[in-house]
Image (cartoon, rainbow, N blue to C red; front, side, top):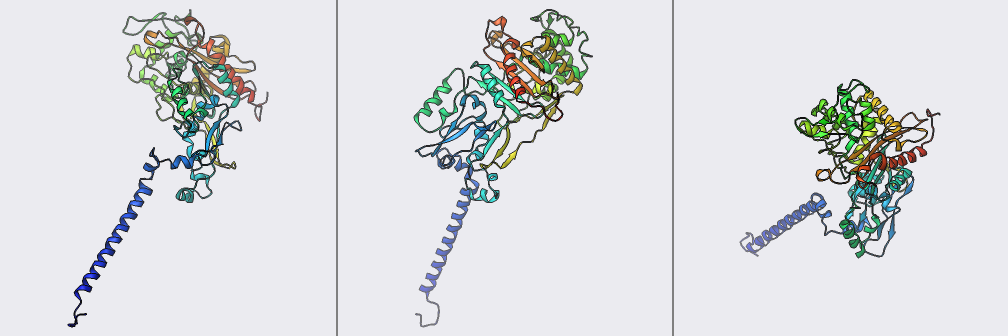
Length: 507
């Protein structure tokens, strides 16, 4: 102790050191808290998505996954395993529903509904909890919910069986709502081959990706094709709305053959009687010359606008799975416009888009947003979310839609679409044979789009689009009416068979 009554230098130095150490500890604690906040909140997604982090996958497959439901029946399931991932996905009729369910693989992730509805199926969606905010904070994993689809099981099976393994696709829609009733792509695959983490999963993945037939390609929504003569529905709508055609039976002043503007190229037809034919006759027998000239007369701007109203060039379409955009070029010269107006040149469409075209005619001119999920529920069946039908566009006037229904019905009753006729129903359709390949050398694609209304019903129940990539028969015999129309008829019959007369539907 200092005898002079002053402060002891040694004690003063010790106190200062303690204060500095305390300040340093406090600073380190703050830094630790800041870093923890950064990692846990601001960068949590980056760490969660890191392929090296398997905790998410372990948690996702640590309990049974919710199910995807078709017609009141689960078409998926979960199987207990002894590995790191306690449960793996199973599929009932896997190839039939693969274009809808996709796959849920511990090795390769998720696709289609398994992907877009993953949080609900895996039980991490906060809306599954009675107190969503608390569940979001605590990250509690609840029992996986179920996804109830809009599919009509009978229509799905009819489409799958109709294609019989050939390359092609079918899309069917309820015109008044946009509910997707069938979505088929063939050849298909069994998603169960990619479930689990065994070596066989890697082998299946390599085999499926190496297959030249591309069984994992969803041709119904992810592949675009030249729509051929089925696009003449759009061209007819544009010409009628623009007043280029005064009425269905007026002569169109169309030569046969038709020389493309500014070129020496002569466009011809597969049938006789197309010279100066009326729109009604040209539609029934698919006169290329009439519709190519109508497209030029209507003009690029009005043709492109009409295609857009039907859903072409829409890059944001979700069902909720992303759909490849169908395209109609907005920068065309007159010869290109003529060919685009008959569904050739650069015009491309998915089968779903062409089903939307047929549905727009059937519904009086409106295009409803297509959707695949009716509602999602908790494991106990309580609704989490439900889809409300909505209108995307008005594609044409009601009067034009009525005229197109008339022409499509004539095509089935007396024209190229007679293979789609159904006793006891009003059916309209349009055939298409789309050329493709270098110099149009490849086998044509066979198309058919249609709608059907039961005699007792007040509105059409279904609109369908079918494309067959490898139709049967010799090149000159390939046609949408011969190869695709019977498949469409089977799908329409399946839907109509499930329709029951109700209020306002008396015979």
